[in-house]
Amino acid sequence: MQIKIKEVPSVKTKLVMPTNEAIKEAGEIIRSGNLVGMPTETVYGLAANAYDEKAVKSIFYAKKRPQDNPLIVHVNSVEMAQSLALEIPKLAKDLMNKFWPGALTIILKKSKNVPYTVSAGLDTVAVRLPSHSVAKKLIDEAGVPIAAPSANLSGKPSPTKASHVYDDFSGVIPMILDGGDCNVGIESTVVSLDNDIIKVLRPGEITIEMLSSVCENIAIDDAVLNPLREGEKISSPGMKYKHYSPKANVTILKGTLENFCDYFNENKGEKTYALVFNGEDKKLKGNVLTYGSDTKDQAQKLFSVLRELDKLEAKEVFVRCPNLDGVGLAVYNRLIRAAGFNVLEV
Ligand code: TXA
Ligand code: MG
Image (cartoon, rainbow, N blue to C red; front, side, top):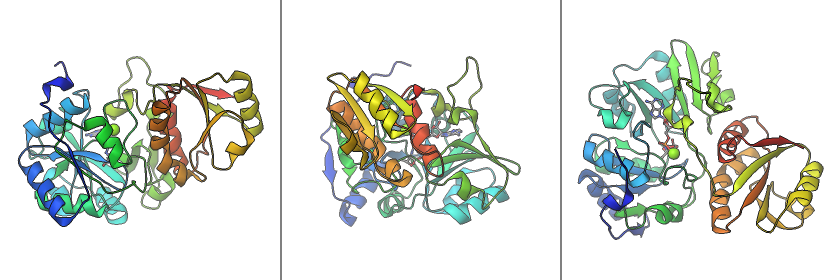
């Protein structure tokens, strides 16, 4: 099917504070089959009633999202998750007990309650119980599970501020709830379960180290750190698409700060930017942006700074390589996609 954003009729988009009244209205909008920009602790979501196939289809239209990329369903209780799944294995229960509400999405076998539009034809469903109070209240008000991908146009960096959602969907969706800046800043960790093994399909705030407190057997999907090989079967369809990309050509530079500075100075042009860690900007002359101090802070700031680079019309960006421990793995996973796997040792 051809996806054209023009097919979505133009509407006036309300950007509002999440008062009880506003959340009530947002719940009604969801029940009536329309979309709402919803804050979560990870990134903003583009929310629809997961049971309403027409509403779910309009998410794909609005985002220009490939039809084979399934959506995450957000719930307000383990019971609601149970109604979406054929069964909840013990390992899934243990993960829910430990990490819900929070930034962990679990892939389960889907029940017949989940339309195939949500799962993009798969027999599984991705489920998450968010910790953000506005997201929780919105699910309560809507009274249904909420299907929500990140609220960005497909391919663009995920939104961590209500204004990012407004930039992408003003005139397309009726309401955005402004919950302020997202705390985590990158999308949830996505895992699938195979008997006693946890497979990490997308790293996030819930780290490998944290998951290993529940289960020792953890596998990291190949696609987390590597480009997809020709003809390779993919565990999570989202991993095969170009992602998080500013318009500029992005290169990750691995090596010392000193070598980074030398490389930047030798290769910079008028619209070239350096993206470095807090405090390092003083060492560089030219266009320099920072993206945080420790890896948690880098996660929180990364998408916002990638969007800023577009506004600045950056043509070339050289980025300091994050540490790969803890949340750093997730930061690196998003960055190598933004860079189209363009990594240089300096
Ligand atoms: O933090 C988050 O996860 C945010 C907020 C809004 O909750 N949502 C989000 O959704 O990032 P989205 O659609 O941008 O990413 C969902 C990822 C995609 O890579 C998709 O392919 C994968 O989850 N996914 C969804 N359902 C799946 C399934 N049944 N099997 C494998 N992967 C699945
Ligand atoms: Mg997304």
